[in-house]
Length: 289
Length: 292
Image 1 (tube, rainbow over the protein chains, first blue to last red):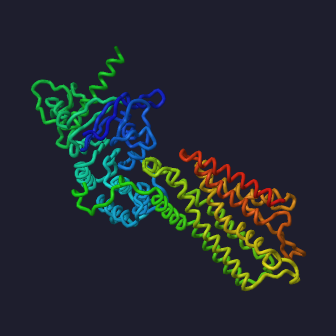
Image 2 (cartoon, rainbow over the protein chains, first blue to last red):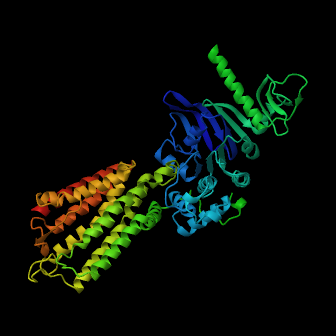
Image 3 (cartoon, rainbow over the protein chains, first blue to last red):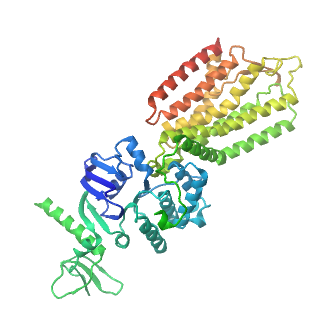
């Protein structure tokens, strides 16, 4: 059963179409949202998080219509949101900030609220910095504070905009575990530039570019599109769309291989690069013609 | 997910909870933020020190309402800054704070309720003045000269003036801080507000202005000092201003500050406009009656 439905949703900033009549339906589980900078990922996430209103189309989140005041409130009661960037108010400790956010999420009973704050603080691994002032935390720790507040009350919808930015590998591993468990019942949409996170967490992936959906399907299907198009060689091949020297000293080429090369298994990043690169080429060809 | 994470079952936020309970929880948190704000703590400490010093020093004591000046400045003016800071604090987190179920109007009302913290300090200051002057009643020089205190003036006038110049200033300043922060949240508006407050207090109290201007001051001073050769001989109430109505005027202004702050956001607009209209009429009536 779909919990989020976007039907021909559009959003423009001046003459730029950030989202061009996008339709998408999400069910419980984890969906990864990939795309280059300016693809419209953050705009889509902000619309789902009720931080931004769509100009066109219909949005339904958990059965509510966020274009109305009551609908927005209803969505927000079930929402956990990690924006791409956020500042922090002065004077708060980690615990007091998450506690304050819990009040803003209508946890009015202090005993239950404090228990819930302690739970998410433990869950995200912030217990040791709970009494510390936010100003004294590192960038990664602050990012986890934002994640912790999003997990308050086990929301039915988690909208996460680049949640792993600034996290070290161990923290990313922990977060994957937490999100993997949450995704068993909640609908989670993760926007990221880290294809490894999407490959590790998501069954489904949506690729946006220029405000349009380029791909919507399983990670396996996207990776399959790159089969037979990745090879290793001693040098960069002219036919490769992307190529880089790996740690072994050999060059990984992604593109249309010449005959007789050593093909290897593609990964999600290869598939993504090919998809976005081809879309860019198509656009350029259209513009020339 | 609860089961998967194996923690105690907690009420989901989707469970309908009373808006009043949320408002009270938020107001408690905001009151704690107010009380623990460094500027407010410093103001309270300085006030306490000045109160103790006042007792230690031997002064004429012909105007027992003088200490309300330090209360009004330290708690009222600095309270304005604190309330402004608390109101604008979440602007840094607006992307997060804008996607929570508690709306901005409720948050503004909560901050207005938090202004009861400085008001409580103002009340405590007023009680302190009452107690210390009850123990050691003020005298004019000579002792027969009138002073703005019980015995020389009606008790209601003394209490109304004390309440107006002390506690109401400690409530009005912070409430104005919330309203200014809601309508002018830009950097520097707190400093600008303090300058306007001080100027709007200092100019009208000069003798060159009439009692109407004095009453319209940001901090109406309803007493006059009678100084001869640098010595304060006695203090009297300004005869043209009726203290009880003057108190009503300032009380209505406090209410208008709350309405103005709440009107910044959509919601309850009709009720707020009605309340604002009623308070404006009440304020105008009190102002006229105070001068008649």
